[in-house]
Length: 67
Image 1 (cartoon, rainbow, N blue to C red):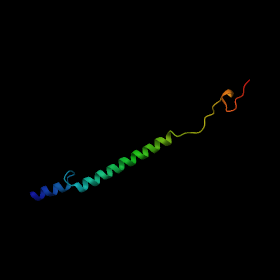
Image 2 (image 1 turned 60 degrees about the vertical axis):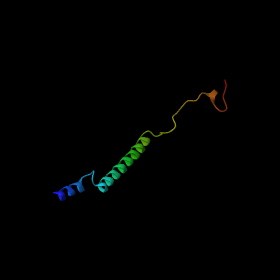
Image 3 (image 1 turned 120 degrees about the vertical axis):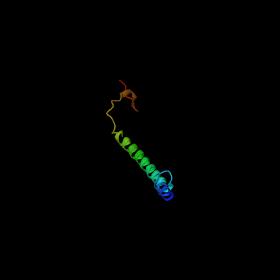
Image 4 (image 1 turned 90 degrees about the horizontal axis):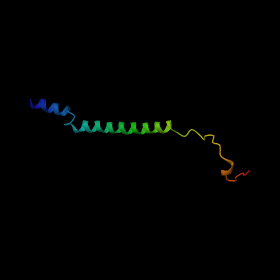
């Protein structure tokens, strides 16, 4: 009976710190990787798409043109 309990504790997540720490390590890596990739995708999605065609009044130019 004691042997069965010992085997059960070896397989249990909260008693076996080697498997639980490995699992938590992979969860952290997956979480960080998904956040980085998600952020990169959002930055790519909302990227600057070029200069818009804006009409600038002549009196606000570097060398203004007056009438």
